[in-house]
Length: 192
Image (tube, rainbow, N blue to C red; front, top):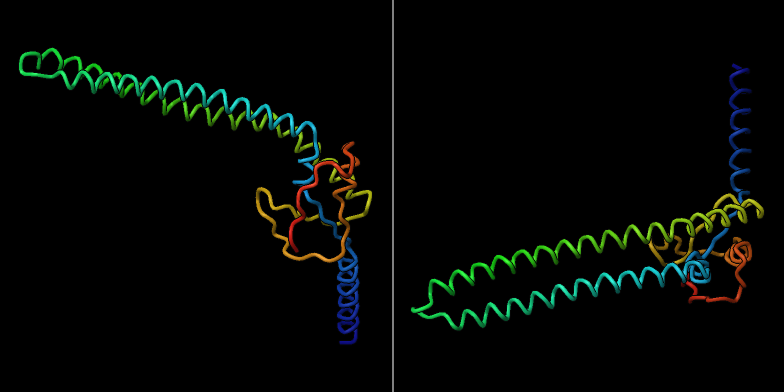
């Protein structure tokens, strides 16, 4: 019985020590939006993506204009319909209707393809930047001995950290690690 009590106290002591060690872990936070907004290559990637988007939209707008022109021609042709030319104009309107349906499908397909192309290009452009920032965050976190780093930006995925007091803000250190001046492009700080 005495051995059992001793084992219990040793186990409780180990558990207490482990909890105390965990309580000593350092926390940090970063505003990843601020880091990305400061990176020249992120700005270049965004400009490239916007240019591609405008090009794709111009192509789609051209197809829409062609559709509207063909539709107006078909509507004008329909106004000329009479008993005398009913058969001839009817066939022409059928052909025009089929052409309009085909063009509408091409427009829909072009929109889908443009969306896919933009998504693919975004991945190609931003993935290396995400990896670079991720590596810098990991490096700074290790240098500062941080166990956890929370992203306090309001960007994609949202900000799950609703309050923080203390902890290390590693935003400036990560920007320095990436070769960005600490004063470059500082968006508004999130509210605590």
